[in-house]
Image 1: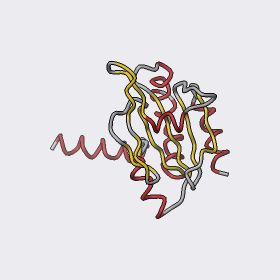
Image 2: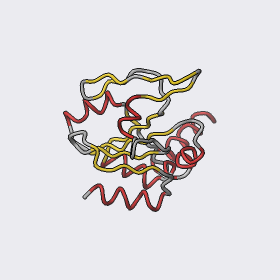
Image 3: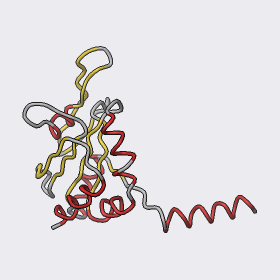
Length: 154
């Protein structure tokens, strides 16, 4: 009985007071765009990047931001060192090793490179036709990210 009550209490809290960010894959978004067109927000990061981890712990834990991302955009969380092949826009993108256990994914490079370099974290926004309409390479605090989402929604 205690377990049931805890489950109901936890379910009620998570469904009403806590909005979890829904992260999609590129493959999912390709299909979802056929049903409902939306802009795509891609968060490109690495496990070793301190600013990336800070954004995950602050900006992407903000309930208001998560709610806006879930309702108005497709959100993709892309680890730039992802080793699996990713299919997007009828192309297959692969991990490109550059040494022992070091490398970067082709798709991260394509979406995150600015001025011939990639600096993490990267926010890349694609329009409904999968064209890059915005790129930003740096930590973005919740307040600034909320303003960005409002402008992107227009």
